[in-house]
Amino acid sequence: MTGLEPTFDWMGTSSDSNDEQFGHVVELASIDDADRFDAVLVGEPFDRAVIGRKGAAEGPSALRGRLAGAKTHHFDAGPVGSVADLGDVTFGDSEPESVMDLQERVWTIAARVHDADAFPVFLGGDNSMTYPNAAPLLDEGTLGVVNFDAHLDVREVRDDPTSGTPYRQLYEAGLDAYACVGARHFETSTAYADYVAERGGEVVTAEEVGDDGVEAADRALDAMGDVDRVYVSVDLDVLDASAAPGVSAPTPGGITTRELFRMVRLLGSEDRLAGFEVVECAPPLESGTANLTATAGARAVAHLLSARAAGGGRA
Image (cartoon, rainbow, N blue to C red; front, side, top):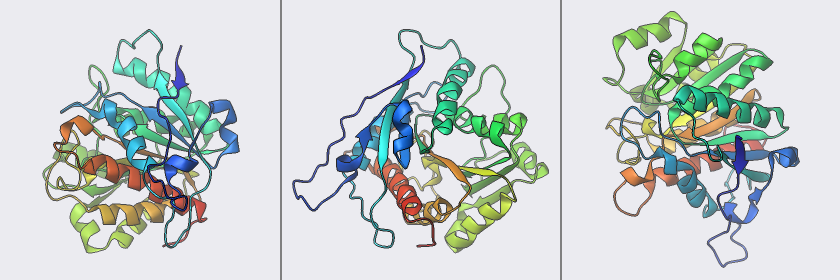
């Protein structure tokens, strides 16, 4: 039976009693206790749907590990609020026969998480899980998605969903608004760019982010119109390959970590924000021991949580 299982022992890495880290404050909890916390983490260690190089199944563990050692203080916002880790989505002894089956089972868990009175943060895992993570929100009203990504991910579903199909699936399920921030030239086919344009979606290129990250975030929010809820996804391949080499498809010309963190904080101040995720962190694909990709993903989570704890603002 599908469920959530604790997989990480949260501990701080510092012996200084003044160094409060996420490892000191994140608590393990069950989904039934989620409403006691401001935010909850859910891991999705799957990469069966990746089009390119696999490795994202190890993403949730790596993201937790790098987040545990990060201090909780933000200079403008102060510390984060209360955070719980609900564990990883599991399937017991049975593996799903298809990615579609996997998505259906994750949808069941994500729906329960959204129903809890806590802000959900999903730790991927591959980008195919964006569909079941966000889709339950469509049952609660209109929905817009901001996708930090080098790609639009609106490929057609053919034999089975992939990491390139989640926003096509969401559109077909009734998605009301879409914005891709950090899109890379020469990474998307014209047919898919046209698909988004025909539906009124907004595409903000990596070059435009480099010109003005605040304006880029504002364009993404403007594209949400008057939807009831907004869901934000960070595919780590939005970052330049030098900042995130451990992804399925690293390429040059991406945005910087500082640009990403600033925009995530701006979106974190949005009152309609109903969920957040970091996907496509693939530690085995990063050579060396710097763990740049997982560190960038973990810091994106920290920035988002600090913005929410501060009650918004453009810090």
